[in-house]
Image 1: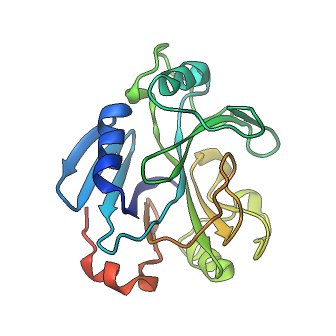
Image 2: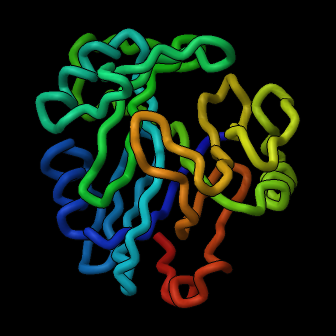
Length: 231
């Protein structure tokens, strides 16, 4: 499974658009007063202005080449502050993940991860890190108290639980997607703390486009569903 686009609804819209355009130098494809879309490698990253000014925030991740992890971290650290966990500003995941990560927070309050997957993301032949080395959307968190229902909807699209693990309904994160693709919809229980942040997982309006179909919770947000723009 590959994530081709995510659509998020945020309140601090203009400042957040400027952050991705000017601070991180991401390629802006289109923008108006309500919606902005960026090209992130093989994915689209779309921000919508929340007309109700609700403070929604999300966790999502971008894939970067594993051989440029240090260069990517330095590049981002020159532009914005890295988040820390117990005084450490990066993570080294073993087990089934096998990756290195670092995190930032954007002006909308999103917890943004840059992740270098050692086994599934190809190395870059270019040894200098630029925005062109951000390869696509690696993860998007979907927090819900209806984990079983969403897991079934995602599986019905042909997207399995990573490693064919059993779905956890109340405690653990569920990584939906094949390991070898390095792209996951993360089903989280409400109230679980996002790593490298003090923020807890909350319900927030979200549309995830994949190469196997669309996952959306906009039916929980009728006002936004009526205004939804297809990008």
